[in-house]
Image 1 (cartoon, one colour):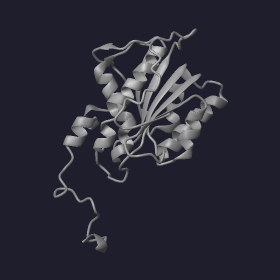
Image 2: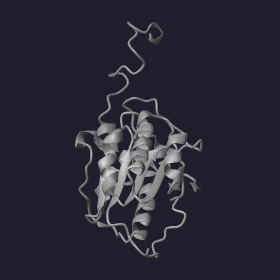
Image 3: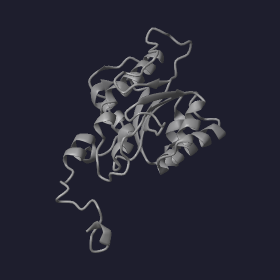
Image 4: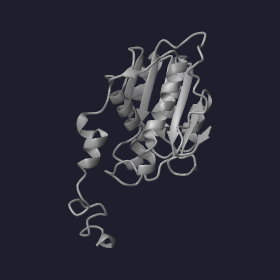
Length: 222
């Protein structure tokens, strides 16, 4: 399912549906590298979700960063998994795309942008080999704008999709009999110093930080 940047991309929310058996343990995972601009989309989604919504104990929010196989124990404990990530689908920048079920590993591997995606595809494959992969999978991906700006923040088109992406996740949680309340949820998140507001507002100006290479060593940069 592909959604335009301006919409909430939820397709079918399923809030009124009651599954025969709701998952007992749910992992909501953000993966990516916040140091490389839009690569941080998944992590920023989990941060925002934790700050704005109170969720029950059976829902774990996790900043997976670029940890790769270190995430395996968390998947093994989960019955259902929602992943936020920046993924190159070849769509207009800022477009959200949903992938569910068995298609999730294939999509993560088809359009590799960075080392963390290969790593997470291996995590899912390993969990499957062990017979301990979550039975239900959802990937909420966003088409990035910029990935080559080291130290940069999310571009506006991508940042604008954090809210809609979270709404999609909340709709899926509602299908799994989870209702979010007002407040916040404690999760395994990054240090406050590198959360979005502090990270993006604290970036030095271009005049104070060399971003094109040192002209003494890279003559073309002078």
